[in-house]
Image (tube, rainbow, N blue to C red):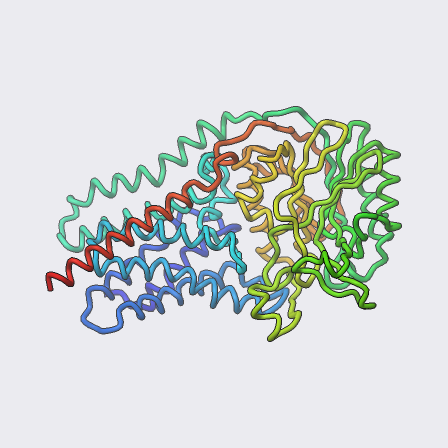
Length: 531
Protein backbone atom coordinates (compact mmCIF):
# COMPACT_ATOMS: atom_id res chain seq x y z
CA UNK A 1 0.00 0.00 0.00
CA UNK A 2 1.49 3.41 -0.95
CA UNK A 3 2.79 5.60 1.83
CA UNK A 4 0.38 8.45 2.65
CA UNK A 5 3.13 11.07 2.65
CA UNK A 6 4.29 9.85 -0.77
CA UNK A 7 0.77 10.30 -2.14
CA UNK A 8 0.61 13.76 -0.54
CA UNK A 9 3.84 14.87 -2.23
CA UNK A 10 2.94 13.31 -5.58
CA UNK A 11 -0.06 15.60 -6.24
CA UNK A 12 1.83 18.94 -5.95
CA UNK A 13 4.76 17.51 -7.91
CA UNK A 14 2.50 16.56 -10.83
CA UNK A 15 0.74 19.95 -10.70
CA UNK A 16 4.12 21.70 -10.72
CA UNK A 17 5.13 19.74 -13.83
CA UNK A 18 1.93 20.93 -15.50
CA UNK A 19 2.08 24.58 -14.51
CA UNK A 20 3.43 27.26 -16.87
CA UNK A 21 6.15 27.66 -17.87
CA UNK A 22 6.73 23.91 -17.36
CA UNK A 23 6.03 21.96 -20.56
CA UNK A 24 3.83 19.10 -19.30
CA UNK A 25 0.20 20.31 -18.91
CA UNK A 26 -0.98 16.75 -19.47
CA UNK A 27 0.08 15.75 -15.93
CA UNK A 28 -2.72 17.95 -14.55
CA UNK A 29 -5.19 15.35 -15.84
CA UNK A 30 -4.06 12.82 -13.23
CA UNK A 31 -2.36 15.04 -10.63
CA UNK A 32 -5.25 14.79 -8.14
CA UNK A 33 -5.58 11.00 -8.36
CA UNK A 34 -3.00 10.40 -5.58
CA UNK A 35 -4.86 12.79 -3.26
CA UNK A 36 -8.21 11.18 -4.04
CA UNK A 37 -6.72 7.77 -3.38
CA UNK A 38 -5.32 9.04 -0.09
CA UNK A 39 -8.81 10.14 0.96
CA UNK A 40 -10.10 6.71 -0.15
CA UNK A 41 -7.61 4.99 2.17
CA UNK A 42 -8.41 7.24 5.13
CA UNK A 43 -12.15 6.79 4.59
CA UNK A 44 -11.73 3.00 4.67
CA UNK A 45 -9.47 2.68 7.74
CA UNK A 46 -10.58 2.25 11.35
CA UNK A 47 -8.73 5.18 12.88
CA UNK A 48 -10.46 8.20 14.36
CA UNK A 49 -10.39 11.86 13.24
CA UNK A 50 -10.70 10.99 9.58
CA UNK A 51 -11.88 14.47 8.59
CA UNK A 52 -8.97 16.12 10.38
CA UNK A 53 -6.45 13.82 8.73
CA UNK A 54 -7.95 14.40 5.26
CA UNK A 55 -7.79 18.16 5.76
CA UNK A 56 -4.20 18.15 7.08
CA UNK A 57 -2.86 15.92 4.30
CA UNK A 58 -4.71 18.04 1.71
CA UNK A 59 -3.40 21.24 3.29
CA UNK A 60 0.16 19.93 3.06
CA UNK A 61 -0.32 18.92 -0.58
CA UNK A 62 -1.88 22.23 -1.62
CA UNK A 63 0.62 24.24 0.41
CA UNK A 64 3.43 22.51 -1.47
CA UNK A 65 1.64 23.19 -4.78
CA UNK A 66 1.62 26.91 -3.91
CA UNK A 67 5.27 26.77 -2.85
CA UNK A 68 6.46 24.96 -6.00
CA UNK A 69 4.63 27.30 -8.38
CA UNK A 70 4.77 30.71 -6.65
CA UNK A 71 7.97 30.57 -4.59
CA UNK A 72 9.22 33.57 -6.60
CA UNK A 73 7.06 35.91 -4.48
CA UNK A 74 9.92 35.60 -1.98
CA UNK A 75 11.98 37.93 -4.20
CA UNK A 76 9.59 40.73 -3.27
CA UNK A 77 8.90 39.77 0.35
CA UNK A 78 9.02 36.57 2.38
CA UNK A 79 5.59 37.20 3.92
CA UNK A 80 3.91 36.76 0.52
CA UNK A 81 5.18 33.18 0.23
CA UNK A 82 4.16 32.32 3.78
CA UNK A 83 0.67 33.70 3.15
CA UNK A 84 0.13 31.81 -0.10
CA UNK A 85 1.44 28.52 1.30
CA UNK A 86 -0.56 28.66 4.53
CA UNK A 87 -3.72 30.58 3.60
CA UNK A 88 -4.13 29.60 -0.03
CA UNK A 89 -3.07 26.04 0.73
CA UNK A 90 -5.71 25.79 3.46
CA UNK A 91 -8.42 27.20 1.19
CA UNK A 92 -7.55 24.67 -1.52
CA UNK A 93 -7.79 21.87 1.05
CA UNK A 94 -11.38 22.77 1.94
CA UNK A 95 -12.97 21.33 -1.26
CA UNK A 96 -11.19 17.99 -0.68
CA UNK A 97 -12.29 18.01 2.96
CA UNK A 98 -15.85 18.89 1.86
CA UNK A 99 -15.83 15.90 -0.51
CA UNK A 100 -14.74 13.67 2.40
CA UNK A 101 -17.63 14.94 4.55
CA UNK A 102 -20.02 14.28 1.67
CA UNK A 103 -18.69 10.73 1.42
CA UNK A 104 -19.83 10.04 4.96
CA UNK A 105 -23.43 10.46 3.90
CA UNK A 106 -23.71 9.97 0.13
CA UNK A 107 -22.50 7.13 -2.14
CA UNK A 108 -19.10 7.47 -3.80
CA UNK A 109 -20.48 8.34 -7.25
CA UNK A 110 -22.62 11.19 -5.95
CA UNK A 111 -19.85 12.41 -3.68
CA UNK A 112 -17.40 12.62 -6.58
CA UNK A 113 -19.71 15.15 -8.24
CA UNK A 114 -19.00 17.40 -5.28
CA UNK A 115 -15.26 17.79 -5.86
CA UNK A 116 -15.26 19.85 -9.09
CA UNK A 117 -18.19 22.04 -8.00
CA UNK A 118 -16.70 22.60 -4.53
CA UNK A 119 -13.38 23.51 -6.15
CA UNK A 120 -14.96 25.88 -8.66
CA UNK A 121 -16.94 27.53 -5.84
CA UNK A 122 -13.62 28.11 -4.07
CA UNK A 123 -12.19 29.64 -7.26
CA UNK A 124 -15.18 31.97 -7.65
CA UNK A 125 -14.76 33.17 -4.06
CA UNK A 126 -11.06 33.70 -4.63
CA UNK A 127 -11.61 36.26 -7.39
CA UNK A 128 -13.94 38.56 -5.49
CA UNK A 129 -13.06 38.80 -1.79
CA UNK A 130 -10.49 40.79 0.23
CA UNK A 131 -7.80 38.10 -0.17
CA UNK A 132 -8.28 37.56 -3.93
CA UNK A 133 -5.56 35.42 -5.48
CA UNK A 134 -6.83 33.59 -8.60
CA UNK A 135 -3.27 33.06 -9.81
CA UNK A 136 -3.57 29.29 -9.40
CA UNK A 137 -7.03 28.80 -10.87
CA UNK A 138 -6.70 25.32 -12.37
CA UNK A 139 -7.85 26.42 -15.82
CA UNK A 140 -4.73 28.63 -16.02
CA UNK A 141 -2.64 25.49 -16.46
CA UNK A 142 -3.23 25.63 -20.24
CA UNK A 143 -2.04 29.24 -20.60
CA UNK A 144 1.07 28.17 -22.50
CA UNK A 145 -0.99 25.92 -24.80
CA UNK A 146 -3.75 28.12 -26.24
CA UNK A 147 -4.44 25.60 -29.02
CA UNK A 148 -5.87 23.27 -26.35
CA UNK A 149 -8.47 25.69 -25.00
CA UNK A 150 -9.93 27.80 -27.80
CA UNK A 151 -13.31 26.96 -26.26
CA UNK A 152 -12.49 29.32 -23.36
CA UNK A 153 -14.30 31.87 -25.53
CA UNK A 154 -17.40 30.02 -24.33
CA UNK A 155 -16.51 28.82 -20.83
CA UNK A 156 -13.61 30.92 -19.52
CA UNK A 157 -10.94 29.30 -17.33
CA UNK A 158 -13.50 27.50 -15.18
CA UNK A 159 -14.12 25.28 -18.21
CA UNK A 160 -10.50 24.18 -17.89
CA UNK A 161 -10.89 23.57 -14.17
CA UNK A 162 -13.93 21.39 -14.81
CA UNK A 163 -12.13 19.49 -17.59
CA UNK A 164 -9.16 18.69 -15.34
CA UNK A 165 -11.36 17.47 -12.50
CA UNK A 166 -13.59 15.31 -14.70
CA UNK A 167 -10.60 13.43 -16.12
CA UNK A 168 -8.98 13.04 -12.68
CA UNK A 169 -12.24 11.67 -11.27
CA UNK A 170 -12.70 9.20 -14.14
CA UNK A 171 -9.15 7.89 -13.74
CA UNK A 172 -9.66 7.55 -10.00
CA UNK A 173 -13.07 5.88 -10.42
CA UNK A 174 -11.63 3.39 -12.92
CA UNK A 175 -8.87 2.58 -10.46
CA UNK A 176 -11.32 2.06 -7.62
CA UNK A 177 -13.45 -0.18 -9.84
CA UNK A 178 -10.44 -2.29 -10.68
CA UNK A 179 -9.32 -2.41 -7.03
CA UNK A 180 -12.71 -3.50 -5.77
CA UNK A 181 -13.44 -6.06 -8.48
CA UNK A 182 -9.91 -7.13 -9.46
CA UNK A 183 -11.18 -7.35 -13.03
CA UNK A 184 -9.33 -5.07 -15.40
CA UNK A 185 -11.63 -5.74 -18.36
CA UNK A 186 -14.55 -4.16 -16.54
CA UNK A 187 -12.55 -0.93 -16.32
CA UNK A 188 -11.97 -0.68 -20.08
CA UNK A 189 -15.14 1.35 -20.87
CA UNK A 190 -14.20 3.95 -18.27
CA UNK A 191 -10.60 4.04 -19.41
CA UNK A 192 -11.81 4.60 -22.96
CA UNK A 193 -14.00 7.47 -21.78
CA UNK A 194 -10.99 8.97 -20.03
CA UNK A 195 -8.93 8.71 -23.22
CA UNK A 196 -11.67 10.47 -25.21
CA UNK A 197 -12.04 13.28 -22.66
CA UNK A 198 -8.28 13.66 -22.46
CA UNK A 199 -7.53 13.86 -26.18
CA UNK A 200 -10.62 14.58 -28.26
CA UNK A 201 -11.38 18.14 -27.06
CA UNK A 202 -7.76 19.22 -27.52
CA UNK A 203 -7.41 17.69 -30.99
CA UNK A 204 -10.79 18.86 -32.26
CA UNK A 205 -10.52 22.39 -30.88
CA UNK A 206 -6.98 22.71 -32.22
CA UNK A 207 -8.09 21.67 -35.69
CA UNK A 208 -11.43 23.43 -35.81
CA UNK A 209 -10.79 26.76 -34.08
CA UNK A 210 -7.09 27.33 -33.57
CA UNK A 211 -5.86 26.20 -36.99
CA UNK A 212 -8.68 27.87 -38.91
CA UNK A 213 -9.20 31.00 -36.84
CA UNK A 214 -8.73 34.30 -38.67
CA UNK A 215 -8.24 37.67 -36.98
CA UNK A 216 -11.38 39.79 -36.91
CA UNK A 217 -11.66 43.57 -37.01
CA UNK A 218 -9.96 46.53 -38.63
CA UNK A 219 -6.16 46.91 -38.58
CA UNK A 220 -4.50 49.47 -36.33
CA UNK A 221 -0.74 49.93 -35.88
CA UNK A 222 0.49 49.95 -32.28
CA UNK A 223 3.93 50.42 -30.73
CA UNK A 224 4.73 48.86 -27.34
CA UNK A 225 7.66 50.20 -25.31
CA UNK A 226 9.70 48.29 -22.73
CA UNK A 227 11.82 51.02 -21.05
CA UNK A 228 13.58 48.71 -18.54
CA UNK A 229 14.00 50.58 -15.24
CA UNK A 230 15.00 48.45 -12.25
CA UNK A 231 12.01 48.49 -9.88
CA UNK A 232 14.19 48.52 -6.77
CA UNK A 233 17.05 50.84 -7.71
CA UNK A 234 15.83 53.09 -10.54
CA UNK A 235 12.08 53.22 -11.05
CA UNK A 236 11.25 55.32 -8.00
CA UNK A 237 14.54 57.22 -7.69
CA UNK A 238 15.52 58.41 -11.19
CA UNK A 239 14.09 61.76 -12.33
CA UNK A 240 10.68 61.26 -13.90
CA UNK A 241 11.55 63.38 -16.96
CA UNK A 242 14.55 61.13 -17.63
CA UNK A 243 12.31 58.06 -17.60
CA UNK A 244 9.76 59.65 -19.92
CA UNK A 245 12.52 60.75 -22.32
CA UNK A 246 13.77 57.16 -22.64
CA UNK A 247 10.21 55.97 -23.17
CA UNK A 248 9.53 58.52 -25.93
CA UNK A 249 12.92 58.03 -27.62
CA UNK A 250 12.36 54.27 -27.82
CA UNK A 251 8.83 54.77 -29.14
CA UNK A 252 9.93 57.15 -31.88
CA UNK A 253 12.49 54.68 -33.25
CA UNK A 254 9.74 52.07 -33.78
CA UNK A 255 6.97 54.36 -35.04
CA UNK A 256 5.87 54.93 -38.63
CA UNK A 257 3.42 57.41 -40.11
CA UNK A 258 0.72 54.75 -39.66
CA UNK A 259 1.23 54.31 -35.89
CA UNK A 260 -1.92 55.18 -33.95
CA UNK A 261 -1.06 54.09 -30.40
CA UNK A 262 2.04 54.00 -28.21
CA UNK A 263 1.77 51.85 -25.07
CA UNK A 264 3.93 52.18 -21.96
CA UNK A 265 4.13 50.17 -18.72
CA UNK A 266 2.56 50.46 -15.28
CA UNK A 267 3.70 53.51 -13.22
CA UNK A 268 5.49 55.02 -16.22
CA UNK A 269 5.03 58.25 -14.22
CA UNK A 270 5.98 57.05 -10.71
CA UNK A 271 5.52 60.48 -9.08
CA UNK A 272 2.38 61.04 -11.09
CA UNK A 273 -0.08 63.91 -11.07
CA UNK A 274 -3.03 65.31 -9.18
CA UNK A 275 -6.49 64.87 -10.64
CA UNK A 276 -8.47 66.52 -12.09
CA UNK A 277 -5.83 69.11 -13.05
CA UNK A 278 -3.49 66.43 -14.44
CA UNK A 279 -0.47 68.73 -14.54
CA UNK A 280 3.15 67.61 -14.32
CA UNK A 281 6.26 68.34 -16.45
CA UNK A 282 6.51 64.67 -17.45
CA UNK A 283 2.86 64.54 -18.51
CA UNK A 284 3.36 67.73 -20.53
CA UNK A 285 6.21 66.01 -22.39
CA UNK A 286 3.86 63.17 -23.32
CA UNK A 287 1.12 65.60 -24.43
CA UNK A 288 3.59 67.41 -26.68
CA UNK A 289 4.80 64.10 -28.14
CA UNK A 290 1.23 62.91 -28.83
CA UNK A 291 0.35 66.17 -30.55
CA UNK A 292 3.50 66.39 -32.68
CA UNK A 293 3.26 62.78 -33.87
CA UNK A 294 -0.56 62.49 -34.00
CA UNK A 295 -0.57 59.37 -31.85
CA UNK A 296 -2.42 58.33 -28.70
CA UNK A 297 -0.28 57.35 -25.72
CA UNK A 298 -1.53 54.87 -23.11
CA UNK A 299 0.62 54.18 -20.05
CA UNK A 300 0.57 54.03 -16.25
CA UNK A 301 1.05 56.50 -13.42
CA UNK A 302 0.56 57.07 -9.75
CA UNK A 303 -2.18 59.67 -9.43
CA UNK A 304 -3.82 61.54 -6.56
CA UNK A 305 -7.14 63.17 -5.78
CA UNK A 306 -7.83 65.59 -2.91
CA UNK A 307 -11.05 65.79 -0.87
CA UNK A 308 -12.52 68.00 1.76
CA UNK A 309 -13.58 66.44 5.08
CA UNK A 310 -17.15 65.89 3.97
CA UNK A 311 -16.46 64.08 0.71
CA UNK A 312 -13.54 61.77 1.54
CA UNK A 313 -13.70 58.11 0.53
CA UNK A 314 -13.09 55.07 2.73
CA UNK A 315 -9.56 54.75 1.28
CA UNK A 316 -8.60 58.43 1.68
CA UNK A 317 -5.71 59.38 3.95
CA UNK A 318 -5.08 62.75 5.66
CA UNK A 319 -2.86 65.38 4.03
CA UNK A 320 0.30 66.19 5.95
CA UNK A 321 -0.91 69.75 6.57
CA UNK A 322 -4.18 68.45 7.98
CA UNK A 323 -6.20 70.42 5.40
CA UNK A 324 -8.31 67.61 4.00
CA UNK A 325 -7.75 64.11 2.61
CA UNK A 326 -6.49 62.48 -0.56
CA UNK A 327 -6.59 59.18 -2.41
CA UNK A 328 -3.66 57.46 -4.13
CA UNK A 329 -4.38 55.46 -7.29
CA UNK A 330 -2.53 53.01 -9.49
CA UNK A 331 -3.69 54.55 -12.75
CA UNK A 332 -3.70 53.86 -16.46
CA UNK A 333 -4.07 57.01 -18.52
CA UNK A 334 -4.54 58.01 -22.13
CA UNK A 335 -3.26 61.15 -23.85
CA UNK A 336 -4.78 61.69 -27.30
CA UNK A 337 -3.36 63.90 -30.11
CA UNK A 338 -5.42 66.84 -28.84
CA UNK A 339 -3.79 66.56 -25.41
CA UNK A 340 -6.98 65.30 -23.71
CA UNK A 341 -6.39 62.99 -20.74
CA UNK A 342 -8.53 60.07 -19.59
CA UNK A 343 -7.81 57.90 -16.54
CA UNK A 344 -8.76 54.52 -15.10
CA UNK A 345 -7.96 53.56 -11.51
CA UNK A 346 -6.99 49.95 -10.91
CA UNK A 347 -9.84 47.95 -9.40
CA UNK A 348 -8.28 44.55 -8.66
CA UNK A 349 -5.71 45.57 -6.07
CA UNK A 350 -2.88 43.32 -4.88
CA UNK A 351 -3.45 42.13 -1.32
CA UNK A 352 -0.95 43.52 1.18
CA UNK A 353 0.53 45.93 -1.34
CA UNK A 354 -2.28 48.03 -2.72
CA UNK A 355 -5.03 46.93 -0.38
CA UNK A 356 -5.09 45.93 3.26
CA UNK A 357 -7.52 43.01 3.62
CA UNK A 358 -10.20 43.32 6.28
CA UNK A 359 -8.96 46.86 6.86
CA UNK A 360 -11.45 47.76 9.57
CA UNK A 361 -9.99 44.98 11.75
CA UNK A 362 -6.32 44.90 10.75
CA UNK A 363 -5.49 48.59 10.39
CA UNK A 364 -6.09 49.50 14.06
CA UNK A 365 -3.78 46.63 15.03
CA UNK A 366 -0.96 46.92 12.48
CA UNK A 367 -1.29 50.32 10.84
CA UNK A 368 -0.20 50.75 7.21
CA UNK A 369 1.80 47.53 6.80
CA UNK A 370 2.77 47.01 3.16
CA UNK A 371 5.19 44.94 1.12
CA UNK A 372 6.59 45.62 -2.35
CA UNK A 373 4.99 43.36 -4.96
CA UNK A 374 4.27 45.97 -7.62
CA UNK A 375 2.48 49.22 -8.32
CA UNK A 376 2.08 51.91 -5.68
CA UNK A 377 2.16 50.76 -2.04
CA UNK A 378 -0.52 51.39 0.55
CA UNK A 379 -4.29 51.09 0.62
CA UNK A 380 -5.26 52.61 -2.71
CA UNK A 381 -8.40 54.09 -4.13
CA UNK A 382 -10.04 52.38 -7.09
CA UNK A 383 -12.75 52.66 -9.73
CA UNK A 384 -15.71 50.35 -9.00
CA UNK A 385 -15.93 49.15 -12.62
CA UNK A 386 -13.73 49.19 -15.73
CA UNK A 387 -13.31 52.51 -17.58
CA UNK A 388 -12.41 52.56 -21.29
CA UNK A 389 -10.52 55.16 -23.32
CA UNK A 390 -11.85 56.63 -26.57
CA UNK A 391 -10.20 58.96 -29.07
CA UNK A 392 -10.94 60.55 -32.43
CA UNK A 393 -9.86 57.44 -34.38
CA UNK A 394 -13.02 55.61 -33.37
CA UNK A 395 -11.25 52.93 -31.33
CA UNK A 396 -12.11 52.07 -27.73
CA UNK A 397 -9.28 50.79 -25.55
CA UNK A 398 -9.38 48.95 -22.25
CA UNK A 399 -6.15 49.33 -20.25
CA UNK A 400 -6.16 46.89 -17.29
CA UNK A 401 -3.23 47.15 -14.91
CA UNK A 402 -0.89 44.32 -13.89
CA UNK A 403 -2.71 41.82 -11.61
CA UNK A 404 -6.02 42.58 -13.32
CA UNK A 405 -5.03 40.49 -16.34
CA UNK A 406 -5.51 37.37 -14.18
CA UNK A 407 -9.24 38.09 -13.69
CA UNK A 408 -11.20 36.81 -16.69
CA UNK A 409 -14.63 38.19 -15.88
CA UNK A 410 -13.19 41.57 -14.85
CA UNK A 411 -11.24 41.92 -18.08
CA UNK A 412 -14.40 40.99 -19.93
CA UNK A 413 -15.95 44.06 -18.30
CA UNK A 414 -13.79 46.32 -20.47
CA UNK A 415 -15.00 44.48 -23.56
CA UNK A 416 -18.66 44.54 -22.50
CA UNK A 417 -18.30 48.32 -22.26
CA UNK A 418 -17.09 48.48 -25.84
CA UNK A 419 -13.30 47.92 -25.80
CA UNK A 420 -12.16 46.67 -29.21
CA UNK A 421 -8.48 46.62 -28.15
CA UNK A 422 -6.86 45.65 -24.84
CA UNK A 423 -3.58 47.11 -23.57
CA UNK A 424 -2.19 45.35 -20.49
CA UNK A 425 0.32 47.54 -18.64
CA UNK A 426 2.49 46.04 -15.92
CA UNK A 427 5.86 46.20 -14.15
CA UNK A 428 6.83 42.55 -13.46
CA UNK A 429 10.31 43.39 -12.16
CA UNK A 430 9.45 42.88 -8.49
CA UNK A 431 9.90 39.11 -8.77
CA UNK A 432 13.20 39.18 -10.66
CA UNK A 433 14.15 36.73 -13.41
CA UNK A 434 11.77 33.98 -12.23
CA UNK A 435 8.70 32.13 -13.42
CA UNK A 436 6.47 34.88 -12.04
CA UNK A 437 6.88 37.10 -15.08
CA UNK A 438 6.35 34.13 -17.42
CA UNK A 439 3.16 32.98 -15.72
CA UNK A 440 1.79 36.53 -15.80
CA UNK A 441 2.58 36.80 -19.51
CA UNK A 442 0.93 33.51 -20.43
CA UNK A 443 -2.23 34.21 -18.38
CA UNK A 444 -2.91 37.20 -20.66
CA UNK A 445 -3.11 34.77 -23.58
CA UNK A 446 -6.22 33.24 -22.01
CA UNK A 447 -7.84 36.68 -21.78
CA UNK A 448 -7.27 37.12 -25.53
CA UNK A 449 -9.06 33.82 -26.23
CA UNK A 450 -11.93 34.47 -23.81
CA UNK A 451 -12.78 37.81 -25.42
CA UNK A 452 -11.26 37.37 -28.91
CA UNK A 453 -9.37 40.61 -28.49
CA UNK A 454 -5.84 41.47 -29.57
CA UNK A 455 -3.69 42.46 -26.59
CA UNK A 456 -0.68 44.77 -26.49
CA UNK A 457 1.33 44.09 -23.33
CA UNK A 458 3.88 46.59 -22.04
CA UNK A 459 6.03 45.43 -19.12
CA UNK A 460 8.62 47.76 -17.61
CA UNK A 461 11.47 45.23 -17.68
CA UNK A 462 9.70 42.56 -19.74
CA UNK A 463 8.21 40.49 -21.04
CA UNK A 464 6.48 42.86 -23.46
CA UNK A 465 4.66 41.34 -26.43
CA UNK A 466 1.58 41.32 -28.61
CA UNK A 467 -1.04 38.59 -28.31
CA UNK A 468 -3.48 37.81 -31.09
CA UNK A 469 -7.12 36.72 -30.79
CA UNK A 470 -6.30 33.02 -30.63
CA UNK A 471 -3.70 33.52 -27.88
CA UNK A 472 -0.47 33.39 -29.84
CA UNK A 473 2.50 35.41 -28.61
CA UNK A 474 3.91 37.85 -31.16
CA UNK A 475 7.41 39.31 -30.84
CA UNK A 476 7.97 38.68 -27.09
CA UNK A 477 10.97 40.66 -25.82
CA UNK A 478 13.82 39.47 -23.65
CA UNK A 479 13.71 40.26 -19.96
CA UNK A 480 15.84 43.18 -18.77
CA UNK A 481 16.27 44.83 -22.17
CA UNK A 482 15.20 48.17 -23.61
CA UNK A 483 12.87 47.60 -26.54
CA UNK A 484 10.12 49.04 -28.70
CA UNK A 485 8.07 46.75 -30.94
CA UNK A 486 5.50 47.51 -33.62
CA UNK A 487 2.60 45.37 -34.76
CA UNK A 488 -0.65 45.75 -36.68
CA UNK A 489 -3.40 44.74 -34.28
CA UNK A 490 -7.07 44.14 -35.13
CA UNK A 491 -9.79 46.05 -33.30
CA UNK A 492 -12.59 43.50 -33.01
CA UNK A 493 -16.07 44.60 -31.96
CA UNK A 494 -17.70 41.15 -31.83
CA UNK A 495 -18.36 39.68 -28.40
CA UNK A 496 -17.89 36.05 -27.38
CA UNK A 497 -20.40 34.07 -25.34
CA UNK A 498 -18.04 34.23 -22.36
CA UNK A 499 -17.73 38.01 -22.63
CA UNK A 500 -21.48 38.49 -22.49
CA UNK A 501 -22.40 35.70 -20.06
CA UNK A 502 -19.37 35.64 -17.75
CA UNK A 503 -18.55 32.76 -15.42
CA UNK A 504 -21.69 30.65 -15.93
CA UNK A 505 -19.88 27.51 -14.76
CA UNK A 506 -19.11 29.24 -11.46
CA UNK A 507 -22.75 30.17 -10.90
CA UNK A 508 -23.98 26.67 -11.79
CA UNK A 509 -21.41 25.20 -9.38
CA UNK A 510 -22.95 27.14 -6.52
CA UNK A 511 -26.38 25.75 -7.43
CA UNK A 512 -25.08 22.16 -7.55
CA UNK A 513 -23.22 22.67 -4.28
CA UNK A 514 -26.43 23.82 -2.60
CA UNK A 515 -28.29 20.80 -4.01
CA UNK A 516 -25.62 18.36 -2.79
CA UNK A 517 -25.59 19.99 0.62
CA UNK A 518 -29.36 19.66 0.90
CA UNK A 519 -29.24 16.02 -0.26
CA UNK A 520 -26.57 15.21 2.31
CA UNK A 521 -28.55 16.94 5.06
CA UNK A 522 -31.78 15.06 4.23
CA UNK A 523 -30.05 11.70 3.93
CA UNK A 524 -28.16 12.24 7.17
CA UNK A 525 -31.37 13.26 8.93
CA UNK A 526 -33.21 10.14 7.69
CA UNK A 527 -30.29 7.93 8.66
CA UNK A 528 -30.29 9.31 12.20
CA UNK A 529 -34.04 8.73 12.49
CA UNK A 530 -33.68 5.14 11.30
CA UNK A 531 -30.78 4.58 13.67
